[in-house]
Image (cartoon, rainbow, N blue to C red; front, side, top):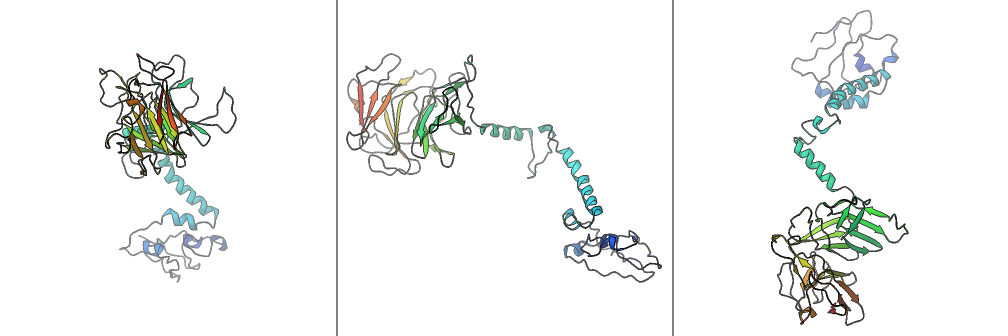
Length: 402
């Protein structure tokens, strides 16, 4: 690179950029009555990185500014040290701002927010951003939006009361009086029962819609003191939605998180069916939950092509007299077994009174707990029926809660 010869009539000065403090010099251009020629000395990469800002330059009359060695590459300092150090004069601050704008404006134009088709081809991670990945991300966000609370009508949902709060899951809902399809949902809603509210405007709160638990109606929510457990339920009939493999879903209230408990199977015990039987999904049965005992029960109900995976729609619905017990994680079952993280299941159908003559299969019944009988009270099964028969009003089914 060519250099300029400094006039012999004036004292030799360093580069103007060196004087204003861009490379750490204490002097500034305001301290000199006359501005020197804007001769620039390019520093090397090593001198900038190593902080060598006191490099000597010769100022003898007639001598020229030291040439850069031809073997050294030109090095333009990055913007970060320039922004950090150029704070002495408005001129330098303005220069840095203009430089940043010159770089930022083209980038902003490339990343226009007018639509997803204008996004750059690569994200910051270097992963190609395609149309499909954008749609997938948008779909994930949609799953996590808060459950709607402003609907025309809700029914057939699962519910439980925990510590003064009513939890409502799924069921069916419509947004207009003439809606006849797409009623099933996985809305998750709470209602604070500790405070007053108007009947016409209940104080409902929509929790984030879960991405795992299915959209079912006519199932049951068991509850402990810090969790609710979604059991059973049927899938949509308009349009028809095929059931997935049954899993018990736990919602942990303190952590606001869902946990899927897959492949539930029975354990052996007193009055229980053999161990290793697969627990199936049922709907429209009678459920009951006892948090202080750490147990939930489900009696009767029905199974068909909307509850059970692989069930043909040509096979008629069946009604049940089965009775299952679920012991919550960390609690002790009636046989003295402590439940692990997945809980414990018992099928106690044969041990119940439903094995006696005249006890009918049923759905749409009710379980009522009565304390004071035996060690832990009793459960009464009331009412219910099938498409053809109904339980007599004076018929009671009784089961020891132990």
